[in-house]
Image 1: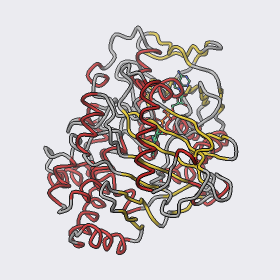
Image 2: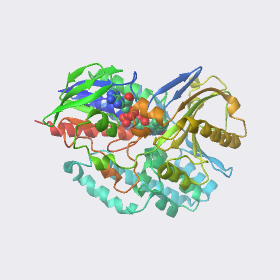
Image 3: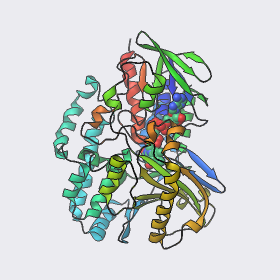
Image 4: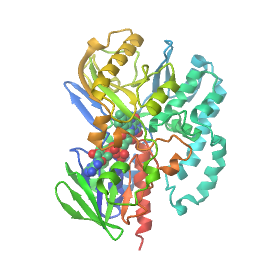
Length: 490
Ligand SMILES: Cc1cc2nc3c(=O)[nH]c(=O)nc-3n(C[C@H](O)[C@H](O)[C@H](O)COP(=O)(O)OP(=O)(O)OC[C@H]3O[C@@H](n4cnc5c(N)ncnc54)[C@H](O)[C@@H]3O)c2cc1C
């Protein structure tokens, strides 16, 4: 069959591998000149940065693609970090969370006065829950009975009450831990799919399993190694890529897709897989379709981000690859993001520095800082005015914590804001993950990986089921390919 994929984000790339591997004639249309979508590269002067994702978890989902193609996964070079995060609190306390489980638990005991056995229990529970819930909620469709009604469902249901479905992530963490700082650390994982821990269901506390139980990794050539390797796999399976070719319309007739119109031409296809933000797929590519799923598309959107890419003319031994400078009032920070769509005067700041591990990303004695805060989606704020104000807030806070004037050390700078995300990656209102998971039914409101109205139309990427992050986007491709197999078995 002739399969068109709209977008070469990690979800589209995963789909390209899976459909091509089944012998289909796959063409990927990508509006930009590179594969990877938000997994993008930036080079300025002697510095290099990963522009988007920085926390690489779940390499096994990439291995699945190598295995499928019969390729050797050891050629995908990556390593595990010995520490996950360095934490900096407003009162000056700072510590590093090591990868080693015993040392990690010891750190929670020593630094935050937690009962080590309770922390151990919490981590083990997350692991067990992930293993039983992921096969149903992450690795298969929630919108097809034959996917849901399996033995795995009963295993997963057995664990659901342990999450007390009406509780939020914060409710559960606050109950579990003595020290509000521990709660703040575990609440943070809500932001991994652009949600608020004060609204997201406690079930999402299992997100940290991939980081604290399994580990945080870094590809040797930067995050862009992920899309570049998957693109190579797809090409090896016969997929063709058409870069700088933007899809403008999905063509259909009698409730069945029949092709695409791009800025360069019109093509016939039997199957179309959209990796474009699902809200924009309906709005821009299917503007006349009357049956767009209104409820799913109306859900609260996930957060956006503002990132400053700074080439820093010095080195900071107190910083690691991943560093979090927390705000004083975490709840207020999320009220700003979701309620008032503003940014608090004391936002939590994430600083990511790959040159700590890969010296070629910055010259000797210098560092490549990726400085990010979560931001509300674009609802017409004056970003040109806001961004310089935010920059000053960040510089003040980082200079205070690190006891050095950071502004005088910036040699190179690039800024990404919600408008950039919306324009460059076609993310609706600059949201990174589509819908937020800010209510207990969010998983069910996420758009399915197939269209209920148009035969032959499938959806992949973080804006559809199962949701945010590279591992989940790769799973969306697996689920879409499985749904296609079922639909076109005969
Ligand atoms: C600042 C930032 C930090 C992040 N941090 C992390 C992290 O640490 N870990 C993590 O796992 N995830 C992180 N993410 C989320 C991450 O980007 C996703 O996990 C993943 O990369 C998204 O993949 P996707 O398949 O949804 O596609 P996207 O990356 O959204 O790509 C979609 C592609 O479709 C193309 N496209 C759209 N419309 C069209 C059209 N009409 N025609 C042709 N092409 C089109 C776009 O150009 C784009 O290339 C972060 C994102 C950002 C922005």
